[in-house]
Image (cartoon, rainbow, N blue to C red; front, side):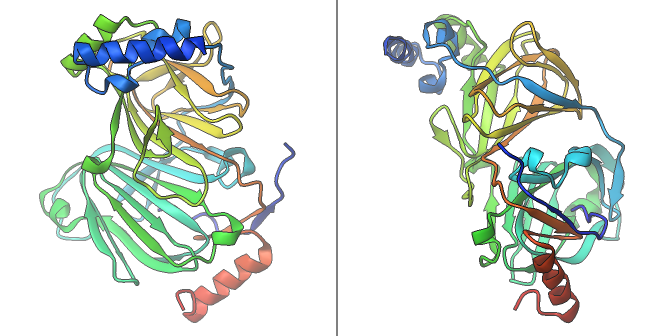
Length: 359
């Protein structure tokens, strides 16, 4: 969605048992108890598991000022000045449109035709509908819980609007768009479109730390427990449907109705990890070292460690978690293009002006 100021920035990469038996037995017991998704409901056994190195908070970024992208997307630029930097690689940019009421309209609200090259856009619809069309012939509408994963690759021209139906009826609109970098060897890959419907996204139970088997079963049965919707990457042995060009995690997390409950989530050692508080309030970090993060704020975690801890400071807190293996490649970003060198960026801009971007 976002069109960065037309400038080029080239950056060089920065330098850079017994417990298992207990967990298996506990998971088997949960199956007997009838806990949905029991094989993933293992948080209560944390005390029996080997010690894990916890990721610590590197930086907290508060809610930024909103701006309009076109006339349909009123967004928070979540990454602030860290957008398009090695700090967040492979993620580049994150725009979030918080819930906003739109009246019925006969006009199309959104962003007209524009080109992209060298990266992917990931659009998640939470409320309302987003309509996409491109020069390759893809045309689709995503609704609540759906994801549009578009690989611009060598070049694509597309447009994004509120759907025709949503424009007619109006209503509450909430969405986000993420920009995900492509490795240098894949930047000129053929454009690909992945429509991912909400029913294709697995929801994995996330029990609070220290919960007993009986409590876990009751919480899962009540429908008020925490869940991790795995869009990309893997969580507790469950893989998301998105196909990616580098190791990436993208999880939509609902922390349920328990206030002050603590949860632990695993992210691979060495991966960048960004925790965005979409709704509510969270405390993030190791016990005794938690940092508060308000709605529309974000916590950037250190790469060291393989587990991070989050406490739901309010019932109904919701998170979006972005992780990934850093690409460690130069970033040259300008306008709607992201390449590795200034020369490649200039070529993309020239191709777009001359009509050769998609040839």
